[in-house]
Length: 245
Image 1 (tube, one colour):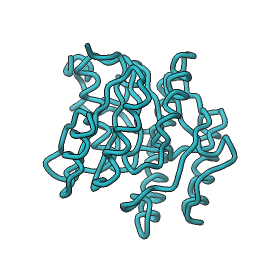
Image 2 (cartoon, one colour; image 1 turned 45 degrees about the vertical axis):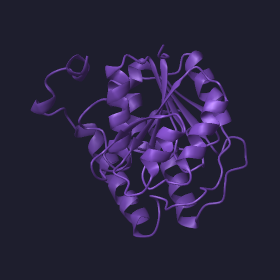
Image 3 (tube, helix red, strand yellow; image 1 turned 135 degrees about the horizontal axis):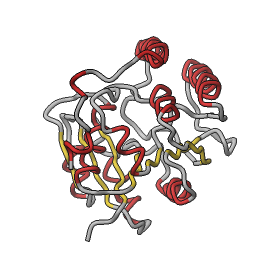
Image 4 (cartoon, one colour; image 1 turned 135 degrees about the vertical axis):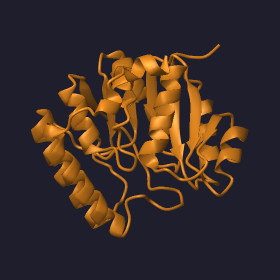
């Protein structure tokens, strides 16, 4: 019998890691289903995830991290899940911390953000990444009106209300971070940060690397500037939830 909660794990070129992540989650015995969204990986990511016990949806080619998450959200809504958790496939997110996300949702939050900075022991990262995180944390805190320490965290929990909000054709296809958190606030959703432990990625390539860091900063600033004037297009006149039901 399916559970009411699904864990979405977006993955691209995570062979050698994603299987361990899925097995670690399943060993916890939490009441949830595990869905890996393989974002067009050319390696054995999908095979390893399926062998470890996850349900797998594969994109025909690489569409981007945000698109992989969006596919997972759409699946969750179609299948009637009431809560969604999400974590990365590279081993950075400690599976035992999923209980923290569930507790935050149980306490009434719509969006639970796992922060690596609240427990005072974040994993090592580049100088540019640390500066960017602090800058966007300050922006998110000022805009939302509550302290946000880790706006780039992909370790999250979403209520049904939040799930219905993110299943939208305007969801970012690449970096859904600070702009999405601000949009949650504008929709009246309750946000909460909880302390979690994170680790250095166990291999593969980070999507925040090299020139991509500069692009990320440019894109995020532009998205935040446009948020106050952005409107739903005529293509969104029909309710998304109704279309997916």
